[in-house]
Image (tube, rainbow, N blue to C red; front, side, top):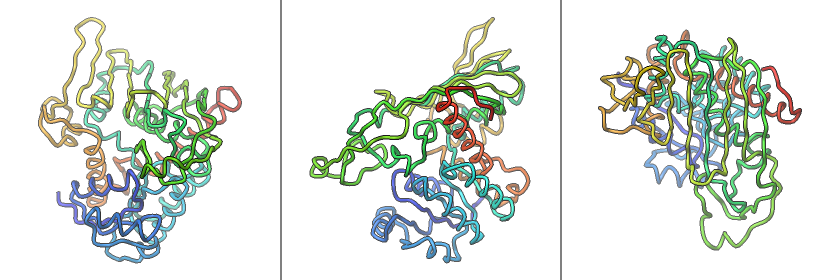
Length: 385
């Protein structure tokens, strides 16, 4: 199915160009890009081969050719930018978090319901083919009743006290960092696979580095270095008000239990999301750093490893797997598949009744969970969601 749509991207940092690439691979034309300054817009447009470098969001939204806006700007800007896009009648796909708090995200859910446009949140990890396969196996009853869920999401890009990025500041990214930045991916993925809703939770958070060295030169997410050696010599100490590590226990509706931890200071773990589902019939386990293998655990027969192979997968998982067995799919492919799903739902109108992609409602759920996690850590208590 050809996707005859045109998009613009807001954000020129780490993830904005990933959206541009994913859109192109999905067959969506990217008309232009907006950065935090006209200079950044021009530099990104030239680097990515885009026709238009927007100076303001108003200029972008006035461009009648744009069907959809992808928001990949810093967290604190998502709410206002999404509101403006909805008011302009543009479809919106926003990076997580959808907003800075549940009051804002609740307002966006309400506006989206009235807008008549498609509104999604980029929980791309849902779209690894074997995560979809796990969801299809659960729906088919192959796991039985889910007894418990365990997992983690670990990175090391903030391992040193000299590692710094805007995300470590609550004023820029929100009061939660590791949980909100990567933990919400885990929570959304578990909901997508299991269909389970969190009923209550108990959290413990830890700021490993209560002070970090802030470079006066610019830094990028995951860059691990400044833009030049000269910048590295000029730093200032900054008090840190967000967590580096979190451990959360979960009680799901229906009685299942769960536990997961997140860390951005785990040496050697570059971008490692793991989950394991324990069902009454079998278990499943997956690791994002080996995304083309799904472990299947049995009690009374040999365990199995399913290597991603469309010929051996459920129909929906196979449909969202582009390459034959042995041709690995990874991080960038998950963006492409989410974008394909999102734009196809616009094309066939299914977004109005039964969207298959993560919606603003899903984004709101994660913010509600984050606020409960923060409250739990502060009160040192179980919190009902």
